[in-house]
Structures are given as C-alpha cells and as structure tokens.
Image (tube, rainbow, N blue to C red; front, side):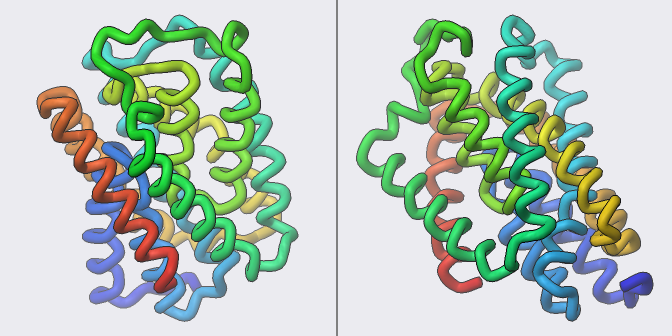
Length: 253
C-alpha cells in the first residue's frame, strides 16, 4: 500500500494525534490506528507492523519531552531496558512469523487482565505518593515482568502501555509521571528491534506509517505537556477509563 487518498491521509493524521496522546498518558492508542489501517484493506500483520512507525516516532518525541523537563528517572536504566528489549526481540520475531489469528486473543486477554487488576487492586499500578522506588536487581520478578512486557510489545503493541505501567509501577513502585517516562523509554527499546525485524521482512507500508508518525509525534509532545501539569489523581482516572475502553475495543476488533 504505497498510495494514500487525501481523506484517508487526514484520518490517519488525526488518529495518530489522538493515539499519541493516549499512548503517552496511558496506553491503548493502537486500538485506534491498527483497525484504521486494516479498514483500508491492509492485512493484520502488515497493519501491526506499519503501526510501529508511528509508535517509534511518538515515543522518541515523548521521551525528549520528559527528558527536557527532568521527568525521566535515570538511576536504573540498564536494569529496566535489558529485559524489556530482549522481550521485544523475541516478541517481534514471533509476531513476524506467527499466525495473525493469535493477535486478537493476546490483546483481549491482556486488556481483561489489566482491567481486573485495576478494579481489584489499583494500588498495584498506582503507588501512593512518597513510595520509595526499587531497582530491578533487588526486586523479585521485576526482570521477568519487564521481559513479558517487552515480549507483548514486540508481539502485539496495542495496549502495551498498560502492561509496562503494571511492570514499572507495580514492581518498581515509580509514580505515574516517572512511570510514563520510563514506559516510553522501554517502548523505544523494544520497538527498535521489532521494527527492524518487520523492515527486514518487508512488512511496512511506509506512506501510511509516516503519516501516522507525524500525527503521533505531535500527540506525544502535547501529552507530555499535560502529564507534567495535571494532578496524579486525574491521570489515575484517565488510565482507568482508557483500560476499560481498551477492553471494549479488543472485544469489538
């Protein structure tokens, strides 16, 4: 799919903007962009791969925004990134060769699990203010949780923000702003390796992917401005609502 009509291009631009905001503040923005790509006639595996172009660019824009505002914790980057990137490498390889019929069940089960977790025990993914953070090497299960998040991100991408929030806030106890900043850093890490695999296998439709990237980058920039100014309680409710929306989207997709 090398050509895009003006109307569809504008739709992708707008959806990319909205997805960039949603992915930066919570997760689930790909539940908008992947179906839009598929509606255009793109096969699910190509849509899943093409969507990563926008995800990559929005993540870089968001990461720069958090870093410029001194909201990116840097004390344990190696411990966080290594298992996440390794998971993304494995997940991307599986996604490139696995049957596309596996994508929807993986998405649905993950979103249902996150929704249940937030309803039953929200403190797991939203620590109280002042909670001390932990290092990956000192926290049982943290490396495995990050590997699983990276694997899911490399495999499906849609909704990975929720999985990373659970891993970063749930095991390492980062606050919501720091979690979002680290979530985006992790997304850059596993998206690089997944994108490389998809490019190697010729699964990227570049024109729609770059249009999405333009809108998504603008959305991420805007979301960083919102994230550093809004009350944590507001972000908590936004995260909860977006989790429920992602569940519905996964059921209907």
